[in-house]
Length: 373
Image 1 (cartoon, rainbow, N blue to C red):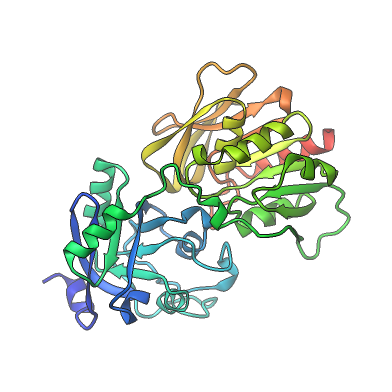
Image 2: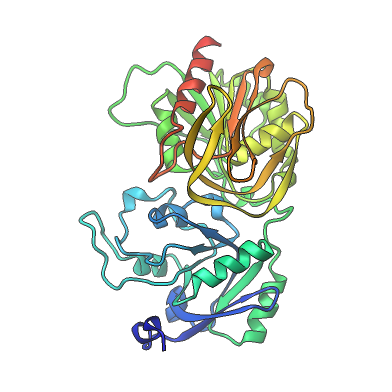
């Protein structure tokens, strides 16, 4: 009997079943603890960060996904609401090895499991996350089902889950109407940035607010509406799902090119690339976590980055598009510049909370583009 079995012996048993029939045993946690009929489905991704589980759980980019944390202790410092990236969790489920019973952090206001229960989010603990991570790394992304039901019923649910391929998940996370975001205590700003919300994080808006006034717009806002606002720049946010399913957004971006400075991050990077004719593809298991080494081709320096994406950009001799960053692990394109269109983008997250912050200079570059324009 493993030590985790002893620790969770008073909890109901639960199963994680992958679409290929692989089964992982564990114990019910979160909303799964009180609802034996609950079944959570999603596409499994693993995150390698040692901290930031609240930021991950509340990041809209994880919509449609069940997150496996490779770090064994999830919930050990509780929940500090100021660290949330949005108003609620967006991932489908949490998969962890261990859930410490008592958080240790002076900022914590509630334990992680109570947070999950309050939002109806399922969690399974006591899982051999090392074996699960190695399995996903070998097979590629798979859909799953988590619950206290039978193995056969969970397998059926996993097979019915569509995953993220060709799914427009942005419509489920974008704001319904425009709103203004400001940073308290900062005055005298003259720049105005329009942030297109594809699932924007609070940390992104906080960094943009250091540059100027920010107006956050629904994903379906047209280029004509944006240009009529007289903004100094347009920011393309992160977000979930397959960029190939978002051609209506790429068309808007194409209409904005050369008319206003543009900066994109993550999904925004992919959509900017598609707007100029590049392709995108689904990676085997994506990049999720921290300390990913990225090489900047401008000055040949190495940046340590935070990443969260299942899709990547493919460029084949596109004129006027310059690759600015590449991933040192697998050569995935991590940054672009379109000089004639006054546009830049990065695949990684320079704004990432809790870090690292090697790439914060990207926001300063965007500010200089807007000032010059």
